Image (cartoon, rainbow, N blue to C red; front, side, top):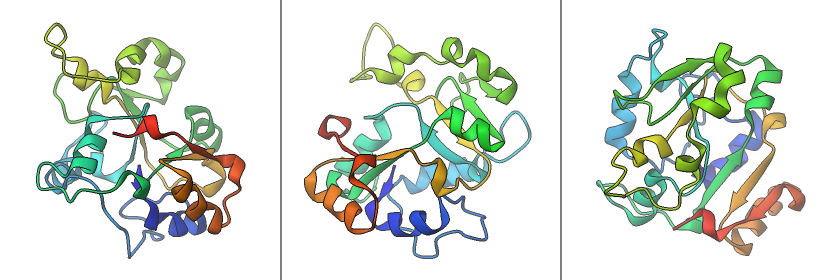
Length: 196
């Protein structure tokens, strides 16, 4: 997920990580600054810093999106029409030979397990896909649902534009903004139910 104002830079340089030589100097953040700071210094099992990876969720309507749209935790509220999902796939990243890690829950949660590319053939069993696709995450009979819903795919290097398979937007106006940037309409899906 990113702010729609970051898309022109993405179309030119791909999705870049924070330390990239191609990092966006006018990047418009939408996340929780305190969580971003925690992630920056969090050491993964492989000894690398979580903050040096580009994070992806496996699904939509994540708890962080709720915070971003509603403006909780001192996060400035962002309209859903200003939030764009950039879609790639594990297969695309594999084909490019880019290093990655994936988790079975929120990356900074001590209960979450981390896996390298050597485990990708087991990803369908290691990630709880029912949790990832669940519409809600606050259930008294499953207090771990929120953590599992936030399973992550963490990409180590910049992701070229060619690996972005499509975009999800909230409405026609957001789609029009992306097509005005030169993105073909067939690559843009309007999906309001991917938002709150």
